[in-house]
Image 1: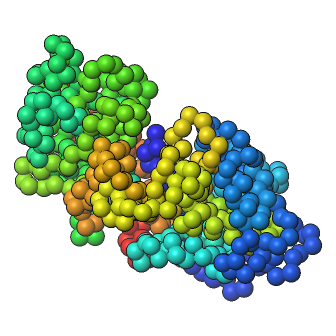
Image 2 (image 1 turned 45 degrees about the horizontal axis):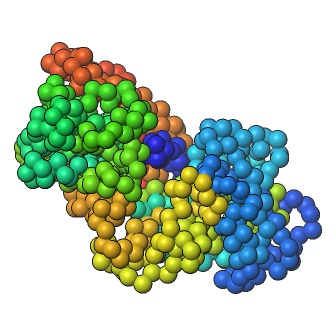
Length: 556
Ligand SMILES: [Ca+2]
C-alpha cells in the first residue's frame, strides 16, 4: 500500500518547471489578511524558542491516521505548542487521499482557508502553482532563508546534487517557493527491490541462498516438492504476491538480464534513456517467469488477490509461502512476530551473461507545508514547520515522548554504526495511540531513521533487516537510472509523461500477466504484435519526453 502511494504520487509530484524567467519585480505576493500587521515578521530571532512572544494560533489542515485517539490532546500537539509557543488548531481532513484533495480544493474555492495545509502530498505542483498565482498562497523564500535552521542543516545531509534538486523542485516557475518539503533519502526506499525468503526452509532442505537464476529455480522447486513445512501435504507455494505489486517478480528476475524497474520501464545507458519492455532481454525475462508459473512455482492468484487475501492465506499454523518478492511483507505478516522474523532479504540474482543489477529510485521530494494568505504570521508557520523537521522535532513527531517512547542513543545500530535514536516503545504501529500525529507531515527520512539502537543485535528485527538488505542491494545499483522524481523542462512534457506512463505501464503489465499465465503464447507473432502495440501507444514519444526531463534533472 505504501509503495503504491509513493509510486503514484511520485509521478504526480514531479514538479513543473519553466525556465526561470524573472519578470523583474513581479507583483506576485500572497498578501496578508489585512488585520493589524505585526512589527517585523512577528517572531523571535532565528533559532530562539519559543518562536512567538504573543499568543498566536495556527490552524493546520492535515490528514491523520485513524489510530490517533485525539489530535487536540495528542502528546505531540502539546509538545509542539510548548516548544514553539504557538497554539495549534488542527483541522482534520479525510483519511482517504482523494477525499482529502477534494476537501482542500473546496477550501481554496470557497476561500474558507486554514493558515496551513500540510501533508496532502498528492497535491500536484501545477495545482499548487495555480493557488499561488491566484494569491492564495504566501511565498516563503524569505522566511525559510531567514529562519530555516533545520531546512539548512537537512540540505547539508544530502548530496550536493540532491540538495540542488530539492531547491529546484520546490521553486515554482515564478522563482518563488510556496511549500516546505517532505523528503525520503532512505536507502530502503531507494533500493526497494527486496525479495524475502523463509530461511528455516533453506536450512531444513540444506539449500544455500541462491546466487543466480538456476539456483533460484532449484530453490523454488525444492520448496514446492520437498515438504519443507513438514506437514506431509504438498501445500507449499514457492512464490506468492498480491496486487498491485505482482509486477515485482518480473523486475526481480529481469535484473539478472538487464536493468529493469517497475516505475518507468526504462533504463539508461551512457545518458541515453531506453525502453526495455520491448527488447530480447525482457522477452527472456518473461520466458523465465512464465516457466516458473507453468511449473507451479508461482502463485497464479498473485494477479488477482488483494493484500488482505494473501494475508488471510498466510494466516495458517504452518508457513506455506517461501518467497515474497516485495519490499513490504509486513502487510501480510506481523513484522515483530514469527514467521516474519525468519524471512530474510536475499540478494539480486546473476543472469546467464553475468549481469546483476537492482532498482535505484533516487531521492523522493514532495510538496508538504503550504502557507495560505489567511496566515497572519507566515514566519511563525515556517518556524513551526522548521522545528518539526529538526532532529529533535522529528524524534518527537515520529517516535513520541522522550524518556518513555524513545531516548538519546548510547549504543550502536545493527550495522555497528553509532545509533541516532534509542526506541523504548514503537508507538507508530499501535492500533490506537495518542503520542504522535502519524501522517505525512514534514518528514525528512534519511539514514538516521535506520540507525536505531539495537543492543541485542537482533538481526531478525524487521527494520534492521531492511536496513541491512538495502546496503546489500545498493551494491548492485547501476550508475545511471531514471529516478522517481524528475524535473520537467515544461508543463506539456510533464502532462505527456504522466499520461503515457500510466497508459504504457498498464498495457505492459496487462500483457506481462497474459504472457506469464500462458493466456497469450510467447511466440514471435504475439511478441511482435505486443511490440507494435507499444509503438502505437506512443512508446517513442514517452521515451523522448522522459529523456528531456532526465537530462534536465541531471543539469540541476
Ligand atoms: Ca507441506
